[in-house]
Image 1 (cartoon, rainbow, N blue to C red):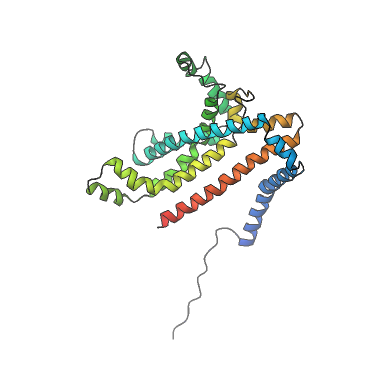
Image 2: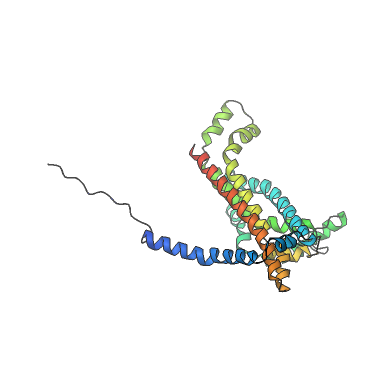
Length: 280
């Protein structure tokens, strides 16, 4: 006579679904949803006409243009440098590799204000790097290039850490088969490797761009904060707060929030595409 074994129930890592979900939703509500809702409600008090007058003013438009342009420059740099760094960390073994890998997380741990001060000291006219660049007619501090440099510094880990695990999980059999067929290393990278890491690379670049749009601490020291020249949108919102113009600050912040939400949706779509791509 056979007996049916009792069904094996999967062990839960957390104490219970209800308690875990409730704690997570409480944290999400208090830390994220309530501040965002407060910002939206504050912006809604302005009214469409007043809101448009604030965000379309010449100074605000200039700030948005400078922010978007510098973020695009920083993202373009990180797209190349981040991919190259991830490739080096995954494909090569060399002395100091683990140290270099750890240094990639420095922008996460370093206060952004400290990063801004350090970059300003390095690239100023009498800094270590600036003293060499200035005689060549290249100015970094108090220019849009300084803003882009600060944005690139704070956002490069997003590209590296997004691409790196995908490169580590790639099956080397495809590359070996391509070499057997006589493909060059450039052909292997462009037609075998890069299509597989493309979704993750695009997702990392999107997150880096979103991070650059919201950067503040690392920029205020190196930018000089000159209206219509080096004033970013986050700084303009801060200035409006100091002037007790809460409506103006809320309107500018809502535009930045809109950009962030759009980029968040794009990033999630790209990550879902990457997951399906790896599964296929």
